[in-house]
Length: 410
Image 1 (cartoon, rainbow, N blue to C red):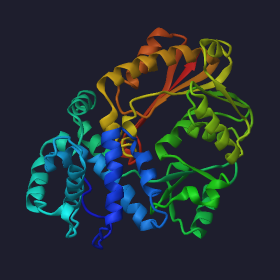
Image 2 (tube, one colour; image 1 turned 45 degrees about the vertical axis):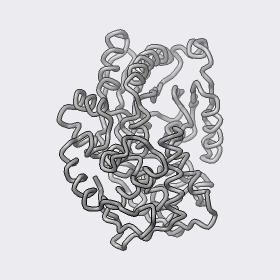
Image 3 (cartoon, rainbow, N blue to C red; image 1 turned 60 degrees about the vertical axis):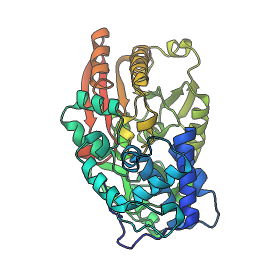
Image 4 (cartoon, helix red, strand yellow; image 1 turned 135 degrees about the vertical axis):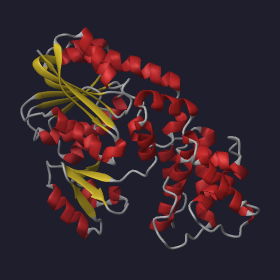
């Protein structure tokens, strides 16, 4: 656990910021609001919030959500998240991170020494140390063995902000120079040709460069998926679970806007968002198609050079950026999602033409959602053969956990 403040300066507490944080935690823990939405609401609470205020609110909310079980155990709040107990969680967060508590009534009688002692004790028990539900800890150990220790530890670190250069409009080198002029420092990433990593967190969405479509925010591991597909200009490519289109836009850039790129999804609103993003990116070889019946898939049988199935999954590989998923995810959802994955693979594979390529990808780290799904699919479809597969570990890469498999239709 990263328990020290990145800045050596002592943190100054402001009542309005801590109140905004406590209210957001109430929405997340008691009303089931997603953390990113609660953070957005908290940041809009006061127009006078400066960059430092916004940073305090966002990072404190995410940290307390991430370490909820550990802090809850230390504070002995027994999962009762009333206002008094939420203030206790903030107190535990402050003490554990080495911040001095201000002399406020809400922090009166905070047992600082006991908190430090209890924190030290709980570092010996993984489910508390890494702040995860019992069932998830058991599942991770069952599927990943001793490597689960490293992987869950890495998943609890704050995610870096990675940009993907839109090569339809600029180059990574040129984008880096333009960002520098906006006082946004970045570093290039070896083996990730289009990626730039922010050296300090900034709100890049407000920049003219983003509004002009010169980049998207996309994790480095996610950027590997389009590259793995190895699409060529002029091909007919289908992104079968496109969502709002992060990978679709990357595919369009790799195809240099030449050929046909069909973005499909069961949710029309996501494809509407994709159209908006495509316009900003100047990606004009994208056609969207809602999957509202099985006929849509059947009509496209044997038609595509490449079909990408970026499958729905547990999302365990992206816990860094979605820490509240640890608390929302349930074991029964995993069973359902695995059945969905198998069904999607079986149905959508028919769109690959003879000699074409099928790519199956997830942002999960579990073999049962990854290698085992591919193995099962290949045992039922001997017209396909495995060409390549790649697992991206969070601990080894420092970025999101991903899996991808490439299959060729004979």
